[in-house]
Amino acid sequence: MTPTPPSSPAIAVTGLRKAYGQQTVLDGIDLDIAAGTIFSLLGPNGAGKTTTVQIMTTLIRADAGDLWVADHSVTGEPDAVRAVIAVTGQFSAVDKLLTCCRRRRRWPGCPARQQRAGVGTLGRWRSLPASAAGR
Image (cartoon, rainbow, N blue to C red):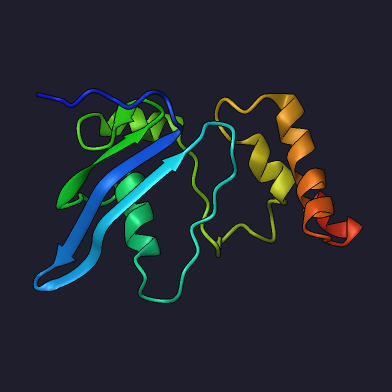
């Protein structure tokens, strides 16, 4: 039986656990990320960031926990999850080819107004140089 999804956050994670052999790498992570937000997962090396993203994007399976992305169960509906997500890593082979604006235009379901708006706003918010708004 598939659990009932939470009330529509973009990403909901409860009790996420993952171990490799005797080494526990995730021990009960909980996240509730509202729709329409830009979210960054930050932490020191070895904190479990990559493992968390790999689980949320269906690349590997969690040992325990409930995970929902856009009202789809990561474990029960992996194809549906992959159909609604777009992920770009910190280092991409196309970084010199695709600017942030161009990459954002490829996000599924992102309205044109938001595609154009976000990077300039982010540039002002982070006090980035004006040249960064085009990247």
